[in-house]
Length: 186
Image 1 (cartoon, rainbow, N blue to C red):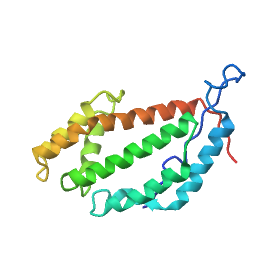
Image 2: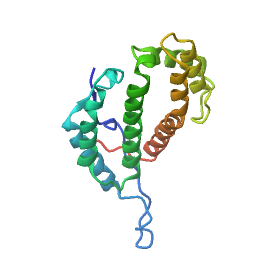
Image 3: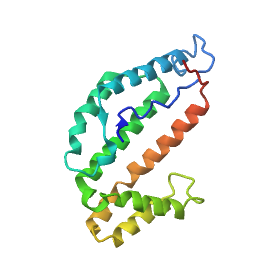
């Protein structure tokens, strides 16, 4: 299954507060600006697709130009939600590149998925805050026991945890921004 490069197709924008001449410079962008920027993101997603399922295969870096072209197509944005969506997409893509380069032998062939599913079930009720590293520590412990993972792999994964936490935080921030937005379809 190929996933559209645009990870934000289902996301919504922000409802801006009342704008006066005094608050115009510091207020969130108009709702129309967010809608236009989201439309632009959708248009730019037509540039190409990245098969995210194969992050662990050789040649994944060939997707860098597609991702770069997508970012260039979107250009500068003013809408806070769109900025967060772009940052989330960048964080995810950079993570996949990092894992491809450093951890594909250890975490490839669905090993990461298996570790994640096992740890998700174990910490389903306790994993509320992104800063709670119990889930990430669980994955690291499973890596330590995996025959294809070395201690260097575990260290590489642990060193990357701040970016995984940032990705989680961005997901939460986007969710909150979506709740503030009036849904306008069509």
